[in-house]
Amino acid sequence: MPKAVINNIILSVVTVFTVATFFSCEDYFKDVQEIGVSANEPIGVADTINVVYTDSGVVKAILISPKMYDYSNRDFPFYEFTEGVNLELFDEDNNKTTVISDYGISYTKTDLIDLRGNVQIVTHTNDTLLAEQLYYDQKKEWVFTNKPFTYITESDVINGNGFSSDSKFNNVEIFEWGGNITVEE
Image (cartoon, rainbow, N blue to C red; front, side, top):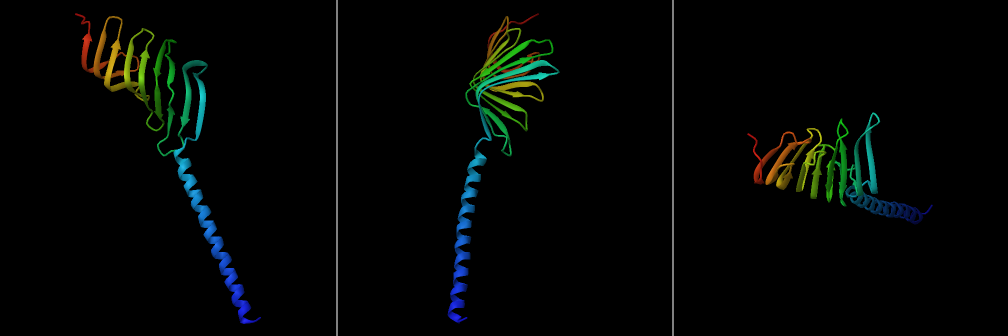
């Protein structure tokens, strides 16, 4: 074969490899871009959820929400309830506590729930806690906020900044308070 033909074949092969490498890199770059976008997106979206949690056939909780975003694909996974949460909790005596908020986010690794916007907790004894933001530590079964709140019992209406309590409101701590409080002697 003449040298010019061999040079043309070599040049053609090098050109094909170069073009293929260029296009494959560009495709790879697009894949990387898509991965970056999808990592920030929820892994799932649920509309109109109604979840009933039972233990040994006994209803323990009912969660209702118009929309839930599942970000369990993240390094710090969470579930986001952008259109509000309505949660009913039942204790061992089947007493119901209702929790309502405009927005909620539940962090899986820390078992911390952040509720925001018109947060209301109403116990079976009608003790009521109202706040703009409230946290719930699921492991410790503890409710707390450092924001303004109103706590209403059968005999008292307490307004303040900073509230902390167990989930049954048996051990309430109020940091700054005011309002109508009854003191038992």
